[in-house]
Image (tube, rainbow, N blue to C red):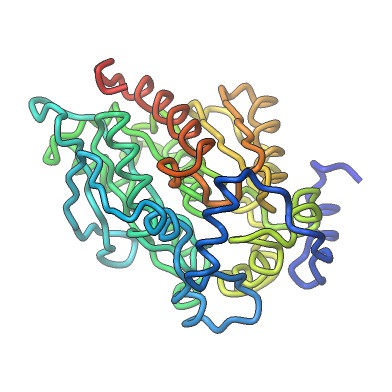
Amino acid sequence: MSAADPKSFIATASFSVAPPKPVEPPRLDADMGHVLAVWQKLGGRGLQGLKLEEARALPPLVLAARTILRRTDDMGVDMEPARIPGAAGLLDARVYRRRAAARSGEAGAILFFPGGGWVLGSLDAHDETCRTLALRTGAVVIAVLPRQAPEHKFPAAHDDANALWAWLMREAEGLRIDPRRCAVAGEGSGGNLAFNVALFARDSRGADKLPHPVHVAMLTPVAGGGLDTPSHRECGAALPLGTPGAKWLGQQVFEQTKQAYDKRIALALRADLSGLPPISLVLAGADPLRSDGEQLGQALKRSGIRVTTSLYDGVTHDFFGLGQVVTKAAFAQGEVGMALALALGTDPRYI
């Protein structure tokens, strides 16, 4: 069976079959393990067997980092709440600006999508990530939470993401943003949305033609819908996301099993990856989604796309925002911040 054969892939990876039996949790770096232990003391646990309201009440992983630090820090970044039009109405958003950044002239911007499997995400859970990106790039970071399942099934979030990019390009001048200096980024399911926005902009035509993002940052992204991959077999018992949790999320998002293999989800199986902007792909060793990300990186390279795939062993899904307490998260933040700053043409003092 070829990994590039969609029919074979679907036959072995369907949500309708039992996921691989979880093995022992993968070994973590000491700082990552400490964060995870604190998270569990705060009530964090796997998603399997939970009702929707119970899952949404779980603490985000970043709350453990805040607990360890015993303080809150705005990192020199201002934040304003906003409401921004998606595909079917206004969506909650936050706008981040580095306090020391010059306000004269048009700024670059990053449209950011939170993770949470299109079910559990929140803007607050990604506050540190957005502040970090604003701090390291000097760009305006606009974080928006698309509609969530099961109230709004697939592809509602993808429709919102595309509408948000169109809105940003349409309103950029009034927002004092340069549409030629805008990027997209996202974590988990949000990384998937960021990638799809780049495809949407690439494929826009005629009067609806949109500027392309100058860069795409995908942080431990959803890049496939299958459960029978090497990383699912190795990391099935991982936290905060394991294979049973991934299956639980898929059951909330998709009306039918086959939707998990829609080309907007199974990104590495697409045959039309050419013409995309440079991409930063950040993967975690103890993440069941890792193999799909690795496969996507390889597919992008074969298509001639400039992609940097960075694998950080000893850390978990959703580790990126933990830079103040997890060493490898700090390294990942520096790497992605530099790539975005260079793509956005940021003044070197902000890098």
